Amino acid sequence: MSIAEVVVARYLRGMNDLSPKSTDKFRAYRARKRAAGLREIRMWVPDVHAPGFAQEAERQAGLLRGSSGECEILKELGELIDDSWKDLD
Image (cartoon, rainbow, N blue to C red; front, side, top):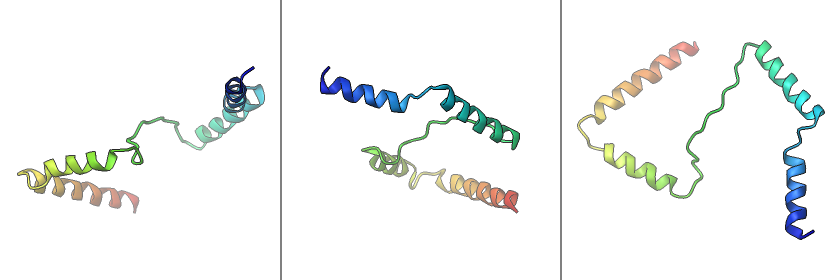
């Protein structure tokens, strides 16, 4: 057995532990959350630590900066934020 096979086997054993004990633990955790009125969702979001993320964000912001609709968009975003704060009170 090569060193790579040992490392992969060790990684998979620890990371993909699907033993009954492990699955029961997560099943119970999810059941408690559902009983508390919560719902599990999974979502993919941009990785802000990815190489090139900051440059792409700046590029897209530059496309909007100074555009005719920029003030309107900022006004609508401000209204949405204000409404969100009201909902928290």
